[in-house]
Length: 535
Image (spheres, rainbow, N blue to C red):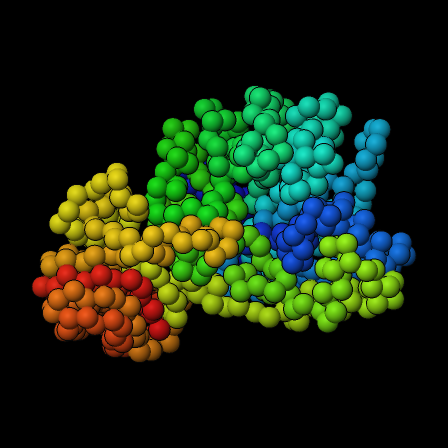
């Protein structure tokens, strides 16, 4: 991909300088210019936000090494190799979260720091080389806009909307950024604030009374940006982890995108519907600008659905320590348990030992030293091999093409309420496997005689290859399934009662095939479909 002019909105679409629609797909560079402790495998409050992480690093290593550490960290956590690798995987955009503290000093008056601008400039040059649009994301605003660790707030209060000095600094920062980058086509847009005003159930207080102040801030900062830059697209997020749509009763700019976040949701259309409705009323595009931290089958459910509905997305995060659900996993350095132990009131490992451990970490964060997980991208784009839950059949274009059921839509269903397919709860919900586990994997699809479902996927202009389907199912009676590809091959498979799993060859996909669809049609059987493994 190449950068083809400034991105801008056209009705509910984002288009480039040629007027061609761009469906955003990408990753966020979390933990680079604003750190979060969980990405270091540290979960306590002592190491949960940048200012506290910086304090602990200095406690462990001394001031001189700490200064060296953070310079090397920012030079190496995200490099040219990361951006080029992202583009090579097929993504077209990146979201760059940052803290205001890299751009301006705390204290009285407005005094600029050059470090943040230099880092942004360098990353934007890599994005230009890679042909990827970059979104500038104010993740930590002066005073904090969220009231939690993710904005590096001092006291978990969203002071951006309370203290005039914080508000003035934030407006000045965005005007400065707009003036600096107004001519850079690689900048896809300005993401004004990340996740403003956390909900009361987050445990840090009820600040919903500040939501009108959020609206006023958006109006004020938009005016400041437009004094310098009239071309770049603006991204606006609602309150409550960017999941509340109440501020979207009006447009804040004629070139705006409605930006929302989705985590831990059942990954069907219902989790997108409030935002679709809000965007339809305003006639603006949607961007699921932060999402992820889940299982690969969850990715294979939500992101192809969003794409089919014309909704771009940006996953979180590109890289973190010891993981399997991000493309890059940072290896745990030898002795790192001594650092974690210190965070839990254990002994100080000693300055030299701590320096040694963190020096190894600085090597491990480099892209070429990470453990890579291409299977993550395979699921995001549904590229073989990947796994999809049977309940996540195509939504678009809809009944009669994507699926055919003999029942009726039912608001009482746990999932896929808008379809006529029977969804069965195979067992009761269990304890969550991880924080964002929504438990939807316990659901199966009951396919009855003369019903069918379709599953679209991408092949990436693949070479000629044999395609196989490993079908996880439970048969309740003897019968036959007809399984076919959009490209033409078709096979009929007989199932005996109590069949569990079966592998079916679907024939050869011609070279150059970019998109394909599997259709599963029950000829005369009632079968509980659980998972499809496309290999």
